[in-house]
View 1 (cartoon, rainbow, N blue to C red):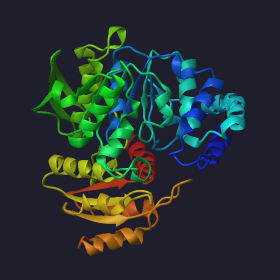
View 2: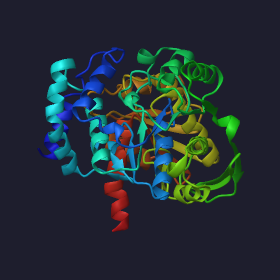
View 3: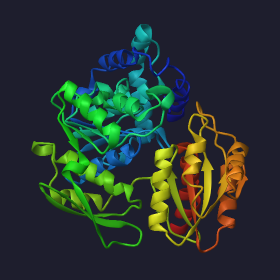
Length: 439
């Protein structure tokens, strides 16, 4: 099997699942893993859920663990450019041919599972492949990001050393419920007896998570109760701050933008302090590790004329965080947005978070298996009703070119919205701008 064969097979499984509310979802995943020899049980794990920040928090955890000398697996979703990003060890994605070879080896388990519960879905297969890869490579620990929700997510078969719920916002409401309480209850389904759960959720979401933890016997730790953040003077394209806990003060310099990453770092630190033994990094190891942090597609900044930011912000919570980060980081600048949003997401509420910024918009589209982009003209109409300057250009490469041409030296181009358009344009930017500059 070639890598192209593997990706073709996986893309054909995107709709190979019943409703995400189906109570048999975990039974199918459990059977699949059993046929694979339960690879997820061969190494300790950290389990990270939440509405926003779970990918960044997972990456922070994995980066610090790698810096501390632990061979660390990392599974996050969705990927920006390649399916191989779903299975990384010490920051390096699985090689394409290795990916294909593992999938081919997994086919008997896929067939056996299919006879019992139907063919494993795209998400389930990629998750299982990551579990197998980590087991084969003998990782010391793996950080596993939740897919959707928590209770019925395929990742909820692991028994982690600690669980995390970053925060709770209104996303995937058609699956998880339409209130913060309902969504928090579903996400809190990852709580397990005796396993600490750390959360940066607030209000009714925090109360709900704390209630669920008490009911199952999971020790609950709120980030605000165990950590404080203090700003420090920092570099121009990064941020410096201190996180103080009962264990001491961590002096951190992150080479990434967005103050929300400070909350994510504090969440990771409170999580590390719940660990025991060899897994727990020291303060110095965490400080050194986070100077190397790279979070592609999360407030990722490329200086230039104009400068460009890539940030996946496909729901109202992420959009609000991006808007706040832009105001804080570039208080005297204007913005030229390039945006595409999936039909499955709340475009109106997402866009509303950006309409108060000094900005113009180019709305575009994307072509991705299993996902449909909202029509650019419909997004344009939303902007027009709000009195915001905008254009609609279906081709994303052309949309980026137009946004760059209409920007002057005071502008920052912001590519955001769907993971798909962010990934497409980031990949184009790296290949056509960054690599040419280096050469």
